[in-house]
Image (tube, rainbow, N blue to C red; front, side, top):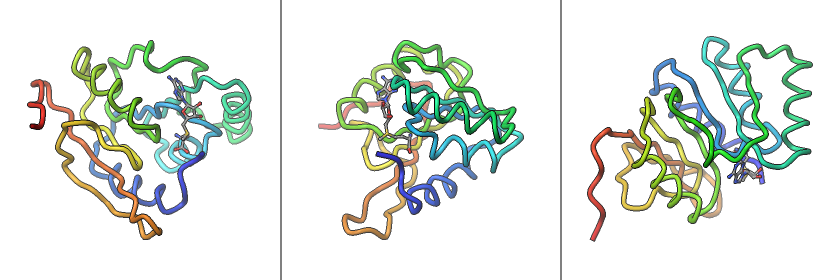
Length: 155
Ligand SMILES: C[S@@+](CC[C@H](N)C(=O)[O-])C[C@H]1O[C@@H](n2cnc3c(N)ncnc32)[C@H](O)[C@@H]1O
């Protein structure tokens, strides 16, 4: 399921606080987010990882047609990817995936400064900001600052 338009607007608000480094969408789906990000931020590198062939291929074709030189798409499991040079991670996944991402961040924080998550919290992490969408569930979009020091777990 792709991010909604309102979620996209929230992501944009949060991205504007995240500097100029490389943005990685963990599970880029049909490209809803990465295509629009690559157009909006031509000065930033936008990377998408996607496991499913058809969504990945579709995004790749759209990116080529739009000549988005700052967009790179990998048909790859992002858990196995080297995210060392990423500055901002974005995701719209599920609670189990968030737990795995939390563990990956603890093991290899690399140069990651921020993580934006649509709807699902990073377990035991304190968000720096939360935007509530104007939808039925008041769905949250979280901005986390990734610290190099392991965070305390909640009790
Ligand atoms: C809910 S969609 C979000 C799509 C897009 N990020 C957006 O916000 O519109 C999640 C996507 O993550 C992909 N995905 C899930 N686990 C993955 C993994 N380990 N590696 C790469 N892609 C993955 C799924 O195939 C799906 O397309």
